Image 1 (cartoon, rainbow, N blue to C red):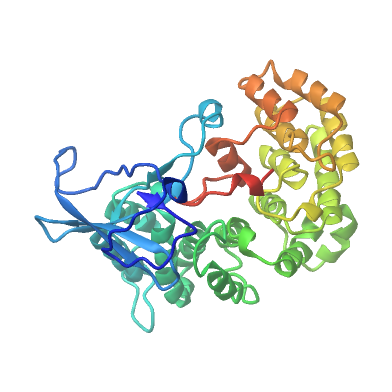
Image 2: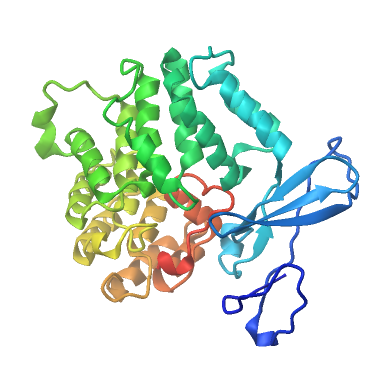
Length: 419
């Protein structure tokens, strides 16, 4: 396959002559189609069908020449392999797991059975819904392509009124909603989807006394935070910060008490809101640092400090990056503290001290050298030290750890957007 950003005017089926340098060769397509009995490999002749959508993208499908089956090919641009290996390799294009139209329709039916639209009565079990979806789609949920999960979210949204059926229904709806719409951007119509979801913000959980519903409520907003505007993230900060910042504790006199799991979700949510101002992030980070220095911080809180002070935001603007001198003070305090949780602490130090090739954000070279020396003796320490001292792109697992979960299959954050 070849692509061109300069040629135009050709018609489908037309034979054209082109200069070699006017075309860019694409990587070969490789895929496995799920068909027939499991564990049985067979060759299947197909016809490749290409359709130009209304938004200007190409849908490529394989249509079986011997059966009625049809499979849509889902493309991605993601590196593969381990953290140590894939970060050193150039990005490769390959085809994602193929979800057939029949599999997608079966998954939609399963969703509608638990969360039907309109006045239909729910018949499915919310507790087993995720497992049923994995069975009908033929793969684990982390491998569901982004086009598939967005279509499933559209179905889930149509049945959002049914989350009021029980606390179990609401917890499952909130959990799936955040998972299917994560990270809140990257696919067509995601802006519209986030606008629809934000309408629920004023309602709050339907079962606020159920701890799991409250946890899943905040977990959902954490997962889609990248699609929220700055104003929306500030609103979340206004609601959550009194539980996290000592100077705002007085506002909690009439507020319900938050349990440990909810507090962890609050920290993850705030750390995921990269459009908050640098000053807001610095205040949150200072509150976290106090717990870390005292040895009372959980791994989630240590992770949150790294996300708040990261030199390379995942999606946020550079003017919201915490000032270099503030982060250098954090690092000095962490280096002087015994590491009760070395794995989490080392990863956070990498985020705080990572080399990004920008003198406004890069820390003092001598400090980065000290960080590297502290990291090298640890497991995967050589790799961590390189990230601090050299301009090295992150690997797939490292990006997933920053997000606290993997990106949807088929989505990739551009390398030049996270330097």
